[in-house]
Length: 223
Image (cartoon, rainbow, N blue to C red; front, side, top):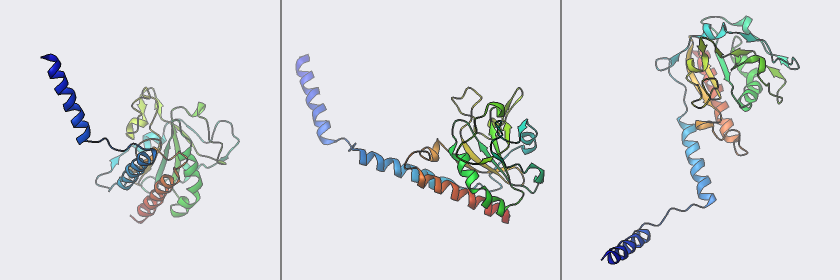
């Protein structure tokens, strides 16, 4: 009796497999799915409207312990905080945990961004400036702001605390705050739409992210 039931069940299982063939899993098919998903996520990235933007306490972040340049002093310092004007300056934070790519990309486009907005501020937000390892791919050194202290965590303020970072590490990103301290744009690197930015095939992702950064600054200047 049990044997007969088992035979019927086995036959049903076989029939199900025949009627519903498995999807192809070739490397080309998998790569195509990844590209489609990444492109869809990139298309979803957008500049937040003033009404929808997350407000950030910029003064609190800028008053945190800050190093004007990388500790080894071998790089050209780009320090423009003296040009910062409350209510007039756009701020771009390079929120940095383990990646260098977004820092290098920001430094490469910084002259163009500053030409659009001369009072623009570009700063690195990292856990501990004194132990932060600077990039070796760019001659520039941006000011390093300490993001985590005894009674504050700026990664949390920006909504970029890494869920597996023990409360001290961020999700790597470029963040644009408008002149009123509103978080208008978050460009992810190593996660989300930017998870493939640092891969050999990541040039398209990089171009899309940096193009959106420039578009954002151009738009904010006109507001």
